[in-house]
Length: 91
Image (cartoon, rainbow, N blue to C red; front, side, top):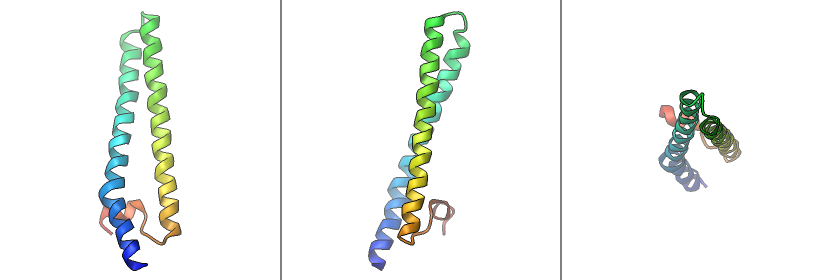
């Protein structure tokens, strides 16, 4: 069981954490792009609607990513692995 825990810890640190970070950055970029489009095209209702849509999808993406982050921490706690915060800090 020790080998499995070590393997799962490395998978989390080397694969899952960078993927979550990349997806969170992408969702935040979509959100910011939507805000930019919404403000820049204040006079054009069609473009504002596109900005609103990007804001909505960015928020949905961030909500899903933070939900996954929480689920992973619950699963890690179940298997007595260190949580994501402690693996990011280095132990």
